[in-house]
Image 1: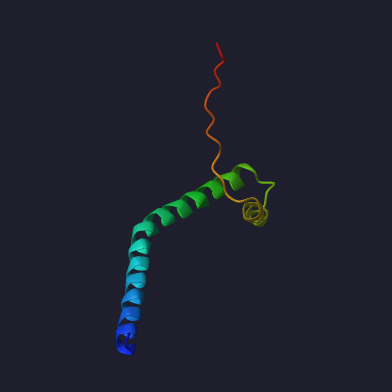
Image 2 (image 1 turned 180 degrees about the vertical axis):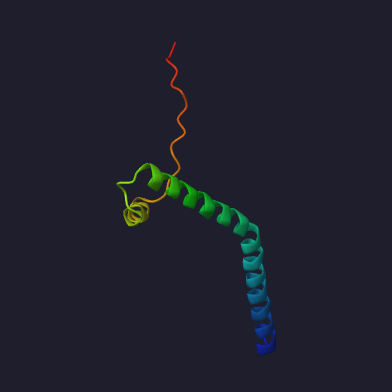
Length: 80
């Protein structure tokens, strides 16, 4: 394979990757912003209702433990 063909192929692959990244960003950005906004609102509400927890402590807890949605438990029905 000639070097010009190889360089053209490499340029096309790089262009494909960059365009794919731009499309992914355009599709995911609104959802990411919405999730960040919701997280901020939940944090503010938690800090208002639990004044003994500082903002830094809550941030550390989230960083160490991770942010998880509360479990959605279905009602337990007895076996018959």
